[in-house]
Length: 222
Image 1 (cartoon, rainbow, N blue to C red):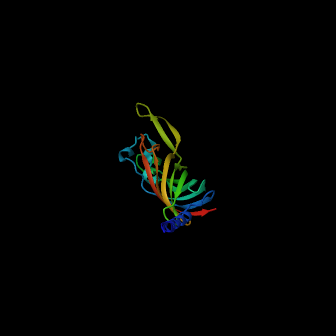
Image 2 (image 1 turned 60 degrees about the horizontal axis):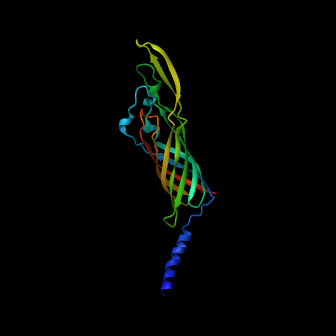
Image 3 (image 1 turned 180 degrees about the vertical axis):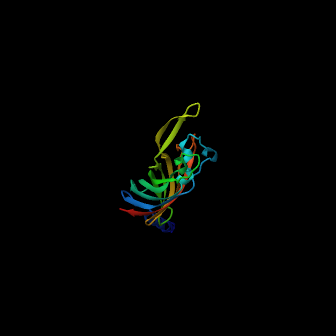
């Protein structure tokens, strides 16, 4: 009798474990969706930069917040592990218009452009419920590419006479670590995560710069 009871208890568990297994091995998935970046997190005292630093002409909050379009592909190495590559495309703010003002007084518009981010990451998928599955993601990103602009620096003698000017090509691209947790059900994916970096050009010294994000995507499996 005890054996029969044990079998009756064990059979539903086995059935559930079989139905809840992931079966994504060697599948290819395409992803398209929206990503919303919340205001960056960094020490407020580190925002102040020297007058000669071109970062004084940019607002990092505006440049790293807002909505972007995600386009990506993900390949499942096994049932649980996958590797993915994604682009985030944004039409966003680059530098403040004041950088175009040469007189002592005047106004100018801000400069905007098409910014592209590149993400490479590894995902671990697991099930907690019968429908859908969770995933943990870790990787790295190259953010704010195509943010190039020209910076001008002038040199003066002891009597404040202009000696000459130097023009350099600058940008606000930087490398960052990327972490995300999310849930996939049917053909829909939602996720929450952050990008974290200590190598941005916004500050005079090494400063932690974290950008939280949320995303919603449609997944097409092949």
